[in-house]
Length: 149
Image 1 (cartoon, rainbow, N blue to C red):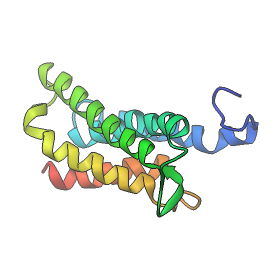
Image 2 (cartoon, helix red, strand yellow):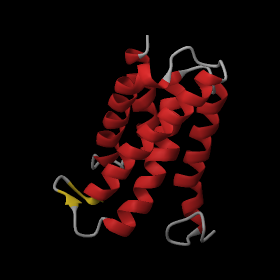
Image 3 (cartoon, rainbow, N blue to C red):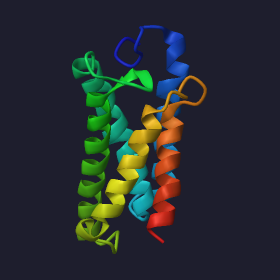
Image 4 (cartoon, one colour):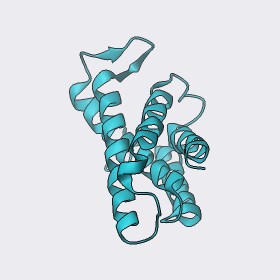
């Protein structure tokens, strides 16, 4: 319980971690290897959001965002770099294996746009109402579908 929850409370397992697992499972089942939007969504959730939490907790104390004191510049930078880096890596791997037609270099600007949008969504002060484990991948999927038609 302690390694999965933030506060050591068992009830917390039914919130963030359960939603996270459900969203990762759904995106993987529906989009794995065949959709660059799915790659971007998984990268934003797993690479970006996961890294932002770690970096934000360790390096974010003195650089809180002006519009959301629960988030930091350090965490947001990690969110963008993690989401973009993971999506570039997975796109490159899936392209070289023949699963995606689009190469990482030709998708880079669009993947950076998706990562930037997800970074903004993750930083918004609305996560008390809607979990960012839902908002971030939904934003990635929607923007990805528009950019990768």
